[in-house]
Image (cartoon, rainbow, N blue to C red; front, side, top):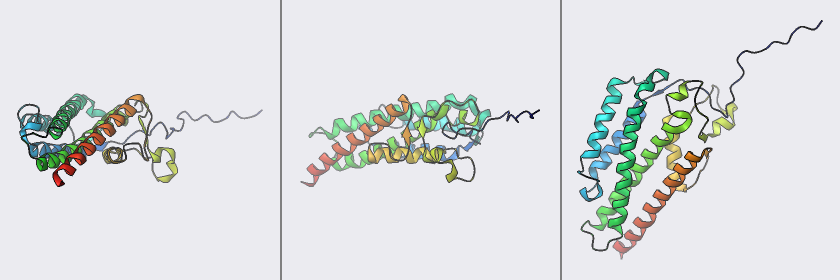
Length: 231
C-alpha cells in the first residue's frame, strides 16, 4: 500500500501576484510631500488656486497628523490612517492640476502679466511636483496601497515590476517600495510610456496616460515659450 502524498497546507506565493510586504517607512513619502510643499510656495500667486499658502498649509497639517498620530513604520496596523494619506494625495493632485492649467493658460497668452522666464521656471516646479504626486498615487493604489500590501488579502497588482517577473534576481522575496514607484513616475514622465514596469489594470493605465499627457503638454508649451523668449 502506497503512502499518502505530503500535502503542503501553505502553497507557494506566486511572485507575479506580489509577495506580502514586510512594511515600509513613512519618511520617504513624507520627505517627498515636504519637497512638493516647498515647490508650491515658490510658484507665483497667479498659478495657485486660491491663496498661495492654502494648499501647502492643508498638506502640512495632514502630513503632521500622519507623522505624529501614525507609526513611522507602515504595516497592517496602520490601515485606519489611510484616509488621511488619501486626503494629502487629493490636495496634491488638485493643487498641481490647477497649477498646470493656469500655467498653460499664461504661457499661451502673449500679454500675460507674468514674465516668460518666471513661467518657465514655474513650469519646472510644476513638472517636478507632478512627478512626485503621481509617484505617490502609484504607491497608494498598487495592490490596495502600502498598508494593504502588508496583508495576504491585498488586491491584485496594478503594476508588474521586473523583480516580479524574475524572482530569482533577488535573494529574498522582493516587494516594491516608495522609491520604486517614484522611479516609475520619473520614467513615465520622461519617456511618455512604460519602460521597465508595465501597467496591468485599467486604472494604472489611465493614470500613466494622464501623467504622460500632462508631462508632454508642459514640455511642449514651455519649449514653445522658450523659443519666443530666445528670439
